[in-house]
Length: 172
Image 1 (cartoon, rainbow, N blue to C red):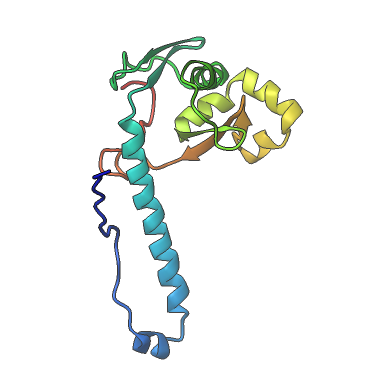
Image 2: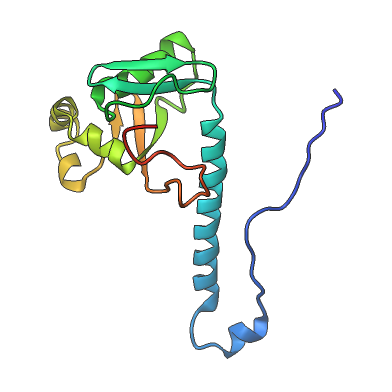
C-alpha cells in the first residue's frame, strides 16, 4: 500500500571482549547484562512516556470528586487535586463507555507517578476496597488493581527522561 517503515538502532552499548571475561575473577557477563537491561528499561520507559504524553485525551483531577477532560491534546486546566478512587473509576468509565478503548486482558493499565499512587492509597474508598479484596495491600504498599484498572507505579520523573516524564505532583 506504499507505506514506508524506517528501522534504526537505539539505546546504549558497550565493548566486550572474551579476554576480559577470561581474565576476570568476577562474573562480568551477568553484571553487564543487568546494567544493559536496566538501561534498556529506562530508555523504553522514556519512549513510551513520550508517546503517552502525545495522546489527545487529557484527564485532569480538579477536586476530590471532579475533573476536566479534553480531546485536543492540551490539558484543559492545572491539576487541583491528587488522584483518588473517584478519578480511577472515572478514567475507567471514560475509556470503556465513551471511547470504547480495548482492555489489556480484563483490565486497563494505568502508569502513575508515586505521589499520584500515594493519593490513591490515602483515599478511604481505596482502603475500604482493599480491606475486602487484598488486606495485605496497605502492608506491602501495593496499589494493585482498582475498578478494572491495574495501577503501575513509576518513579521515572521529568529529570530521569529528559523532560518527557510524568508529572511529580499537583499542578501542570
